[in-house]
Each structure stands twice: as C-alpha cells, then as structure tokens.
Image 1 (cartoon, rainbow, N blue to C red):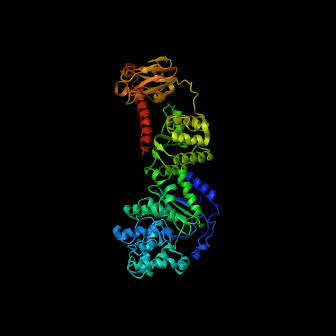
Image 2: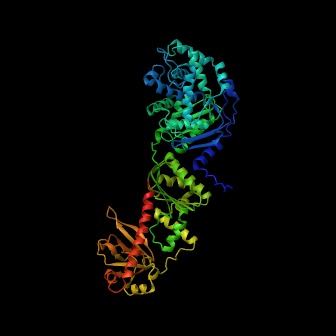
Length: 619
C-alpha cells in the first residue's frame, strides 16, 4: 500500500507575482480579436496565459498557458535564425535588410533600388527569409522548418490545418508582396512555393508555455534550457535579438524598447514572446489586439514585469552566477557560543529545523530565483530560515521584492525568517520600510551577523526540548567535557591539583603569544576568544560558557598562546598547571592522564568535523 503523498511544493514568490499579474489584467476588455484571417476570429477573448522560462530550465505558468494557438508572426525571428544558420550573414543580407520600417507588419516596405525588404520582421522580409530555408523540395523544407520550431519549443509541434487553409485562401496581400519580391529577383523561382511555406509556418500551433521556452532559448545563447539542445549559434542568436529589439513590435517598436526594454515579437493570434538575455524568456497569450496588432494584455503584462522587476535591457546587469554561497543547518554548524555535551546532542538531533542560506554577489531576479526555489523545496520540518547577506555586494528592487515575498510565504508556513548582514543594504532597507515599516525592519534584521541569529535559533531549539541552561549555572569539574569517564578517585585527584580563579568582567585570562602553562576549566560565567584580523583589529571568534575548557590544545604542542581570552562578565575558572599535569604519571595517575588526552582528542575531532561540514557546504 502506498504511503501518504508528499505535500505540494509551496508556490514561489515569482509564481505568486504572476498570479497577481494575471488577476490584475484578466478582466481587461480592451482590444479586439483578429478577424482578417477568418479562422483567428474563433479565439475566445477571455483566453489569457503568462509563462516565464528561466535559463536553468524552470518554467512558471499561470492562466491559459496550455491553450493552443497559432504562432503567426512570432515565427519570423525563428526562421530568420534558421536562414542565418543555413546561408550565413552575407547570404541573408542580400535578400533582406535589418533597418526598422516604422510601418505596420503587412506594409510593402522595399528598398526602392534593390527591392530588398527593410527587415525580416515585416511580412515582406519574412517571406524572403522563408525562401532561404534549406531543402531539396517543399516538403523537406517544411520538415526542416518544423523541426527547428520544435527544437526551440523543446517538444514536437504541428500545424493547425484550418488556420493554414484560412490564411492561404485569404492571403491576397501577402501573395502580392511575394510576386513583387519575385519581380525584384529577391525570390528566384515561383513565388507560390515560399509563400505557401510562409503560410504554413504562421499556422504552427504553440502554447504560451512554448513561447516562454522559445524565448528562454534565445536568452540562453541559442541553447534550449529544458532539453539542453543547441538550436542557434551564439553569434546568430545575438543577431536575431538585435533585429527583434529594433523591429519586433513593428511601428510600436520604438516605444516598446523605450518603455519595456526587452527584445520581443508579437503575433496576431495574441502571442507575445519577450527575452531578457542571460536570464529568462517570457510568453504571454491573449487574443484581443490593439490598433497596431499587438496583444493588449500582453503589452500590459510585459510593461508591469519590466517596471516591477527592473528588467529593462539597458538597466540590467548580465549576471548568471548562482547567488547561493553555502547551505547549512544548525545540526552541522554552531554559533560561537559554547554548548554543553547534552546541548550539542540536542542540536545534532533537532538542528536541521534551522536552515541557513549564505548568499553572495549581485542579487537580481535570475540569480535569486533559483535560491528561493531551493529554499521552498526544503521547508518541511523547518522552523527558522536564516538568509545571510554579508557577502552580497548589491541587490536591486526585484531581489528585494522576492526576498520580502519569500518572507511572507515562509511566515504563512509558520517559519520564522532572519536576514543577517543586511545593515549596509540600503536599497533593501528602503524597500522593506515601504512594506512593513521601521518596526518590521528591526524585527526582520534584528541580528547583525549569522552567528547572532544562529545563537538565538539554537536557544529556541534547546528551550523547546527542555535542554537550555539558565545562563548562570555552575558546571563542576566532574561534569566538564574534558572529564568525561573519569572515576570518582580520578576526579578527586584532579581536584587536588587545580586552583580556583575568580575573575571580574573584562579580565584578560591569556594573551596571544604568551607562554602556555595551564589548561583552564570554565565553571561559571563566560569568556570570549579573540583573534587579530589583518588590519590589526580584534575579532570575537567564539564564546565559551560553563563546562568548556580553553588552553587545552597546548597540552599537546606546548606552543605559545594563539589567541587572547578575556572574560565577558564575572567568571570562575579552575586552573590545571602543565607542571601538575606532567606529574600525574609519577603520582600514579597515568590512566587519568591518558583519559584527559583521549577526551581532548574527542573534543578536537568534533570541532574539526563541524568545521569540515561548514567548509564543505560552501560553493
């Protein structure tokens, strides 16, 4: 019998945003469904889908993202890329230029001297590039073209026969354009053959999701991020995107690139394909069109996406390195506070509920979104998520929005979020204040460092399981971690050889470089271990509480002290001089000496394992 099914993965902030975007424009009634091709008039004005595909192959969908429709003019950049691959730049430029026409998609924009169409995004140019599709005959060229479209989409595509017939039987203007191209020698044979192939390519059936994957393929340098198959060479991908930037939205192209800032292509069936190079592709489907032949909802969706996430091509850095520096849990890494053996055991057992994600570099949508996906995929059993921004050099408002949406999502799952290393992230502070005010910022970024937040989370785990000390407890010699397994007689012998030191807060117990002459057992209070940084400043690297020992490594090597130890408040320690330790053999306590060495080895091994786990988690 099958066990219970795992709960579905939580919706990511990006999915939630797309859903809000869909809800915002779903009831928009502007525009009209195209009817000049009769079969297109059958589309429902209510159909509306949005898809985003990232360059690492993840696709997000909302709405009618799987409703089929015909690709229409969105086929033009794909065929242009195929022509570049087959004929080379010079061969293609002989037949079609790259200059914007500033006119409608069906305009007859030809060079008055050569008859060459101005660019491949208008119908005249598209018919010319379709004539360059390689193949021995019509069917082989059609097969080549359809295979290319399928490679872009990452799945087999087919043609909508009814739309093809409708286009073929009513395409009189396109037929006139084709014969005019034949007149100028741009088409070198019977114009009906490339014209028919053009009608077929426009009638290929796709979905909104297909458009997003096709766009992501262009964003990914010509490699389909879902299948891993290379469809276009990088140099030709750049050329396709360049023409889309200047000509893809016809006589709306100038305003589009100014306000939205993404290479794009629209189709009269209601599709829009848009590309953010190096990051992701966008597909939008909604049949009602504006006066220029572009999807009304598609324009609004892309405009909001660009504005909300700062996606404008000329304002967006090209960064694709993962933002995840390391991923840890409180069961494998510790705060600087010393914990008793019982506390350590409890943290090893339950510490996985505290997840730590160390971020790095520049945070933008494409670098942060995979990290958020990872976080949301590991929420089961989590109580706290620590996001350490100490190694983040910059982040934009899109990243701020995603971080806050993630925080809201985790709160809904009753998982507490901590942002550390955020004090110098001014863009983040401004954004957070705009959403949750000053108190919210202080609560979210209460802890300056990962260590501070981790200590609080550790305390909560220990408190929940009844294992957190009061902070003022005394740990006698018998319960010290270096004294595990000692017999009562050995404890008595050790007690006779130690001296008690009562120290006030701020007292220096040992200094870096001083001779090593004793090991100290911390009975009550707290001390800090300090190291000098490269700029000569002192840095607290660890805090020790009752039950811990320090100076013990020198039992092995007798080298000078490698750190400074200072009391953090009133403290009591027991001092075992090395001279007394060395006389244990002569005094008949060789077994005691051996046990102390064995316990020391165990403590050092545990510290090394913890350090290795932390280092191994760094990427």
